Image 1: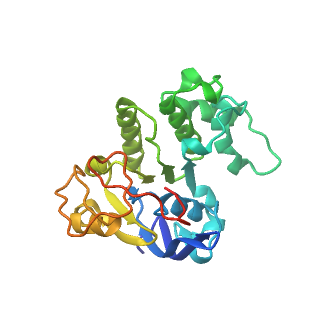
Image 2: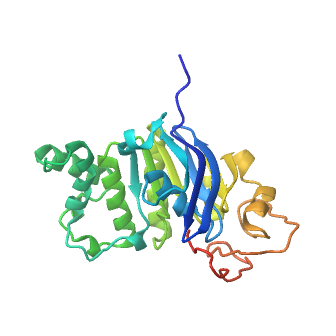
Length: 277
């Protein structure tokens, strides 16, 4: 039997904003059934990497395959949880209606969600402990509840792959642990989870694998081989203390901005640099 294809295969991906390169010649393969953290300094292109795979931002060059097929033929195989700051929380929709949006891909252009879609959406809310909030307007939720609602929307899509862009921003530690538990349950069911993440102290506890990004892929692989002080040095350009491993670096710090890592030297974003996560 042939080997299963990678969940995501990226070849030669290049993205630029206003002629400023954000990602350059990215080659990356993410295997099925792993929980992977995507890590790098501010402006490194982490969020852009997810958006480029999803086709949300245009590519200058490169190809993307999802489960061995071109993305356009397999786009419904990825459930996406965006950054909270990119969502209009004043939009007049309820939590249940938000989750039902995850069923649109299987309905096609001319069908509206019916009884089955409502039932599936309520089951997804149950899964993420949000059933009691089904009729709440999304702006009335706490940060953690908002993240759970979007996770339920991705879950009802029945996708084998999940992209989450900074899901732990503005949530408390208890909520973060609860979300991680839910994500690990999905991973244990065979789902592939890709998370843009900032807190280096939790990498070894949360993820099976890591991708280090700074305009290009510095390293990608299992935590044991890719989460090392040498590779972090190449990614961040300087010393990071309290990062979960012994971080001894040789070069002076440059372009570091990590709110969750203490004692990190920081410098302002360079002129013309895109301050993308």
